[in-house]
Length: 85
Image 1 (cartoon, rainbow, N blue to C red):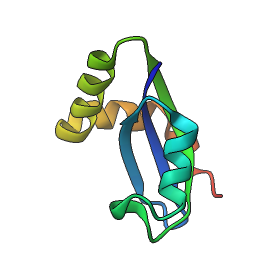
Image 2 (cartoon, helix red, strand yellow; image 1 turned 135 degrees about the horizontal axis):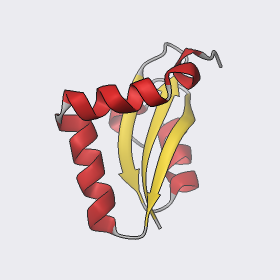
Image 3 (cartoon, helix red, strand yellow; image 1 turned 90 degrees about the vertical axis):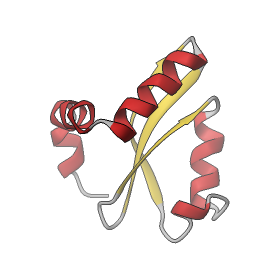
Image 4 (cartoon, one colour; image 1 turned 120 degrees about the vertical axis):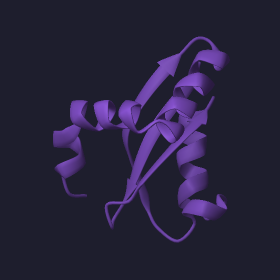
């Protein structure tokens, strides 16, 4: 499986990414392995799974590049985004 995921840190900052191993990738984010996320603890708040790597990468690209795709997703998960750790 291939995953597009959203993680959030204790400051409420969000990070969007792609992986084929969700647990391992979250561990990498939290163990300072990933440069862009190494200064915080991250919690998985949302993911989508795909059979096709290409579909997952296309979705990740849309979330990172197009504000409308991200706005729609944030609206769908707005209550999850307001929960505290």
